Length: 177
Image (cartoon, rainbow, N blue to C red; front, side):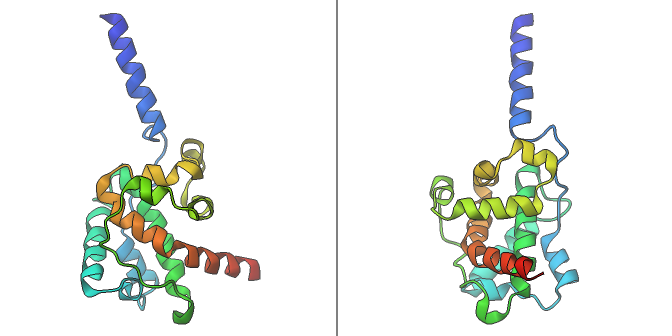
């Protein structure tokens, strides 16, 4: 019986370590509030194709990306979205990414298996992950981590849809400055 308890404790410890639950996590963030405070002219309509897409995106951000509602599975994704949208809102309208269809269904393996995802993961990991999280989550495992909850897929798909143009704009700005 003691051997069973030791084995169970090791499994639980290992699982917590893999998912970064024993490290200092990034705190929850209210993405909509931060955007409103920092960039009051930023309009999420500029990044989605339809009013229904806007409502779905807005509802998901209100549900999953607030300081109180943000659970551990969503915190990293919400910080990624906040950084991305902050950069995207500063990009001139003619250089912004094409509008995304927010409600399209996608599986985690389809999303994480796309060709250009590595550059995006490297870029965003450098921007939002703290040093302790970088020890747990490599940029290669970032997509898998943020899509481990099926409810995160629409937000993750939105992030990865507009990320390449935002990443290019962010890197160009850094190279100038």
